Image (cartoon, rainbow, N blue to C red):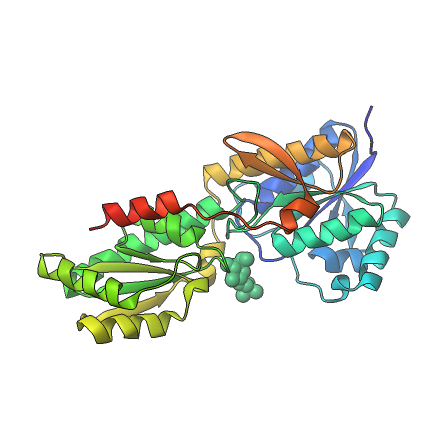
Length: 322
Ligand code: F6P
């Protein structure tokens, strides 16, 4: 016996690779369990505009491998007001939709939480490259974004070695250093700068100088966008140690392209799980994966917490990159 008869799914905030795989999983799992399933176009904006269409099995065909989101996404100012939230809840009720799966990041979770307090059964799925959602080890899109950064650093390393330069690479992540941390460790970066750890330019430039003296021919510094201004950091290092530096800002390239198998599998598992949890009567929860197990956590708890930074991994990267 299901607690709901119909669900809608939307993607919101910055897109991430694997959102399509998550939409596919929600739609196909919902249909498999006999629910009526709807797709909302352009996130919360689509709710306000009643831009909602029925989804069938074929509507999510040929998308598991695609980046972006077929439902599109938007950042919606009107929905941030209590009036906007009430209007969105009314639209869902008028359309006879009992449950809503929201795929997105922190802001999207806030929206889902507001709707749940207005009587809509909501379930959040962590869809963001930033990996900044607490109570899940990984978010959908993070693995792909890290792969893109690692691939870019491999290329930068070639040319930096030829010219004996340092490469200062800015990566995304908003206030979270996880993309920089994971990509930095995986690419053998000498220095990883994240918002969670204070920056010491004297120590960084001194270490780089010593490494060049002992025969290193390049240096990779990965800078999380939240750690500071990449140009100022590059200038600060070059001024101190005299090593020629080049800045690369990877930007939105990190959010596009084909999702990795890890992101597709995570999205598929979480999408199906979210539907089953709604059917069991759960609401105002965010789904996640912790030590390989699927979990649900109260949205209230998720949005009032901060994801702990993995200092052990940070120290490992530092030990291995001498
Ligand atoms: O949250 C995902 C993200 O790509 C962040 O890493 C970045 O700070 C932000 O979105 C960029 O936002 P926009 O796409 O609006 O420029």
